[in-house]
Image (cartoon, rainbow, N blue to C red):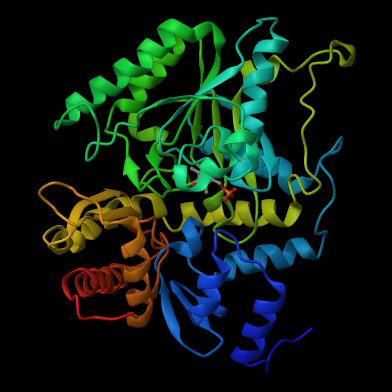
Length: 458
Ligand SMILES: *Cc1c(COP(=O)(O)O)cnc(C)c1O
């Protein structure tokens, strides 16, 4: 099949007639001259009109080594010469086994088993079901509920939304959801506890502890993001996750760490848990696992959890969960090649080094008149715009400042996807210093143009 020769107008028309895009108000999308991507290379994307752009959010938080990486392309081609897919239900496959071994080698110490799925949301669903059934299989009744954090995002399936807490996304579905206990995230910029990092840490941890003290007998697990992603790119203060790990252990509550966004080098370590030197009971990963190539996800657990399911068949302790494409060979093959490239390119220490340069490039953005907060964890950056810096007064949501900045940046040659008034910058981990500087300059100009020039019309 070839699709060369189709014009933008023809593709636009087919999009309008047949395609419903995710997380997208189609009326707005169709009215806004949508970008239709045709190809990519390195940190760049090219649309069917021939325009080129920086991929400023790694194709929404996925991409690691850039686009069209020869090693990754050839890993898929080589796997295709063997087989594209066979099931993992009741049988094994070569790349799925080898990738599981590799994941356990690089994961926080103490995790022992890998359960695959196809997306981050599914990895979270599986984590929730495992935690729930773990207690049941051990004969401990009553531990059925989950603790999560406000503004949490764990994916869009109904279980994942039940432990999510972003009103704009989740409110409409609330009658469909199971209840969960929500505690405040330690957001140093916006919180009820105080202005210092210590105030926020201690206040937030005390809230968690109070909930645990009262309800530990009902709680199966707590689920957290080390850096809240969709909630606005907000990192936990250093040390917070370590304290939370202790609280969970003390109160006999499983800790699920959702590293779908932060995993695979994004924060400057292979996994964000490493910053605090902790091991969760269950770890969810997806996005960067295939370098941004194919849908694959995994839920990693300790052997202690696995062992609670390991029994004679008639004990009915099996984890009855799986998907048609669980552990897809093409996905596992490219994930293995992805992890090999991390080693060959020394990518983690490269990201650690370049994180400091990126911080320097971001400096001028702090002093823009309508930038309230610039948050960075490795190559994960959130720039929160406010109407009034002194009072942290947000813009009225109807003004869609994030969307307007992204639209301006598109004109300036970079594709972004904001979170309300937070400009998100998540470049591919392979981006060079020069590329990072060029991308940050566009963001700086985009924000200044939109927030400081009221004459500018979009
Ligand atoms: C993106 C994301 C998910 C959902 O992953 P999908 O692959 O989009 O289903 C879950 N948790 C976090 C923290 C994420 O950033």
